[in-house]
Amino acid sequence: MDYSRIINLIEKSDFVEFADYGDGIADEWIYKAEARLGLKLPDSYKWWLKYYSGGEISGEEIYSIYEMDFDSVRGGDIVYMSIVNGRNGLCGKEKLFICEPPGAGESFYFATDDGLNDGEYPVYRLDLSNKASSLYAENFIDFLEKRIISFS
Image (cartoon, rainbow, N blue to C red):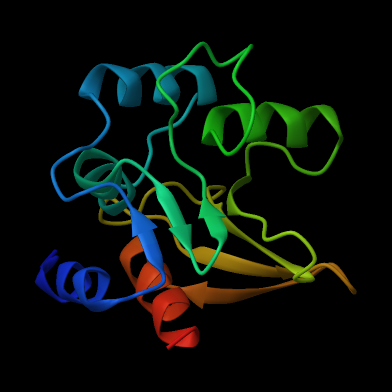
């Protein structure tokens, strides 16, 4: 996958708040997260974690890995949010939420039930008013591009 377009989009955006390019998550924590979740994370998401760590697009947090114990961490850690969503009966392993903007009426998740396809999961948008899901992006990088462009 060519990441040059998303790198350029991130660098030129005034409302993307990610870590500086190259200041990302250690591989060890990505492996720990995958083990705890019981599934592999998509390649483009792992690339983003390794190079940008995490952050927000126009105030909407994109879940990442906080590099802290998953049972005691709070906030937008993808493993912690998976634990909370599972505990609250919001989803099982077929949906791995990556962004749940407060008050937006929508959430976004990796659809993991069919497994990885070329190292990627599609991203779905869940309309919270009627619980209907629709395909939003073919992969995580497409998701980032669409979110950034939607606020441009």
